[in-house]
Length: 123
Image (tube, rainbow, N blue to C red; front, side, top):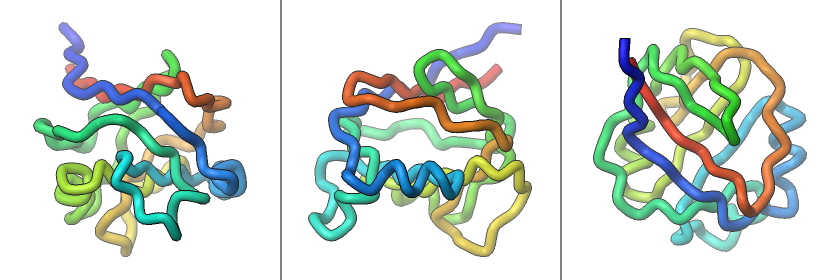
């Protein structure tokens, strides 16, 4: 089975408080239009055009480490398209009450830098 990478984003900046989010098993992505009041907690990336939708069963790959997508909230793809934004929970959950949330398998979030690459792929 061939795996296709359908989206690749480059991290350009890590908010000062992003590490606190990681401790809560959360990563908040925004593209460079991130509102100032949210920049501190965000992982800011350069992706303006989001063409593919993230689906359950896909993988999010952070610097080469893969995380299975277990749940995609109703609004997550919409906010990714508009703002490059979604909240990623690395909690192993298969549902969430928050429509902008994407849940991934429960594994530690890799150490991110402003040179990190995040991609999404599916078989």
